[in-house]
Length: 226
Image (cartoon, rainbow, N blue to C red; front, side, top):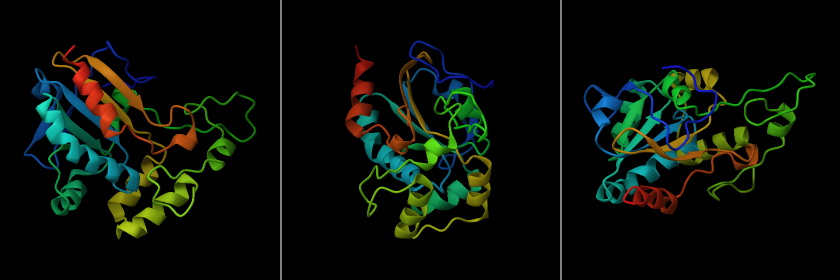
């Protein structure tokens, strides 16, 4: 799989992939999903509390999406053994795939923020050539659970503590390797063609961890019937 320099767009074909599943036996590939529309979402690792919440939302939405003829797939940037341990205690009906290298994230063109050197004269262009000052100024509270809007890197430990979630060695390694990975949602039709795309924080770091809501995802699924 080659890296995309931008997210895949509606009308383009999804790239081939094969990933281990955390809640099924063996691997799942694009070929095995062919013939069935599916919503596939690419997340950061389990260290991200906002991603854990969105995976849970997808699981809750799975019956409605399934009724609309759409499979639900979540790709998590974490080793499969770690994901099996975590989701063994928090099962979900969504199909869980693991990509500890973010290779499919890159193949689908889900961005990861790259920061310009402090002395750079290049014009920032979030997220591909972001300024550290822009990121440092960001404040978020996307789920309303925080006492106030916080910097993204300060929000995570607050919610992890609230959840009783402790990062283990695998989580810390993923966070160190992929600290600026963004999240992307793609609706793929039965022929493997992208029909709908949502990329996190398109407008800048103040919209980090704002993901599509249930109504938006169901509307996208319903559009396949037309």
